[in-house]
Length: 603
Image (cartoon, rainbow, N blue to C red):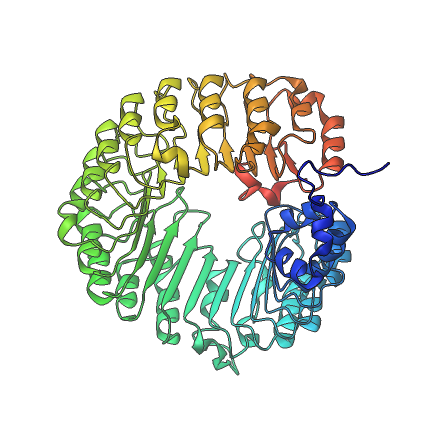
């Protein structure tokens, strides 16, 4: 069939593309994200060839946003020998994919959600990636036998012998008990270049003994460590002493534990441990947290006073589970550490508004504040924090006494980009104050604020508000009074939404899904929704899966449908949908957005 010329007499767009030099096309395409690059490939043969060449020369690639199959990964990386920085969601990959991503020129490799890899992954990395400087791996390993766990330990050591230039190493085995022998004699194999180390889980004994030099032929390679993060069975004074006395360059220390029972006096962290920490005068980041089942009962205000006096260079602090610390201890850190930028406290039984009194004269550097499950805090804390003009991140989730008066003060923060008010006692009137803010808020969580209705949503997200122009991540989970009316306003006004949680919004129906995924919405310049959580949305019909067929919801990467009517009747349709959209992950297990913390439990 003869091509019809354009009315203006110009050449068709495809012919214009074909006239461009291929080198220019390759350069342009190599600057696109992977989704846009793959979308351009089918347009014409010229773009297809240029896209293939661009893929083969990409040096940095982030594939953590969706889970490729072995076949898809092979198509993307098969001819690429230039890749140096790679991040992968490995939930659909197995050992047969090793040859596709284990490239010689790799400098940085991050392997996330590894649910089907065998321990041989470590040997492959050690053999094929000698230039690796940064390596991170999350593996859902179910090994229970001692011999098998020792085999994993030996494989890790083999990798370390092959990767002699490693500067940062992160190994996480979230399903394993801290006593597993994965890190037996591990410290002795660390390369001298190592500067940052993250291990999960590791026992107190494994973390303490090698570093304190109690084993023969102890290697000094760990001396260069400046950042250490450990998830342990229990944090003790002896462990803290070992770390602080053997790591002279330590600037960042993150310790988290989850003891099986309340620790005894001699196997726990006390004020003495904080005294040891106070001698680390160069410490700039300190995280100490305990699972909420148990608390640090032997640390009081004196421990934090010692820390504040000795570690005045602290810039980032996270404290969780300190049940005996009061306002005096927390306030000493805020007022003594003049460079404090990030302050985070969770499950603090005695933290009240008094700790944040007179912030205007002492906390001008604060940029991130997270106060989670601190039940004594009220709107007065929000009023005090409004004097921190550099504040960009504010998390007051599960502080149930934060009310509308607090939102009025928060709305005056000019640099706020992230706000979490989950579980707060706010109403539509409070949201009206937030609707007038000029802050570029891109992430907002209103989860569990049960007094909010459609009226409040319409006030804050109508087309003329600043927040509707910037919002990209929105959590409206557990809002029983939100209906399709609110979602209509959000769909029409919030053009940059990429992550939306509607979990347990019972009155949201298929009508909202149709609006959010419509082709017209994207054609008018709206961003594609990457993640959508519809878990426990009982108002959505069993036939709603058809609303996710192509071309609707272009670019969707994760969909949560747990405990909805789509699951029992839609298993066959789910399989078909996954085959049609290989970049899509559908979660039926009621996980939180992206299965970030529950992926290892998937079957």
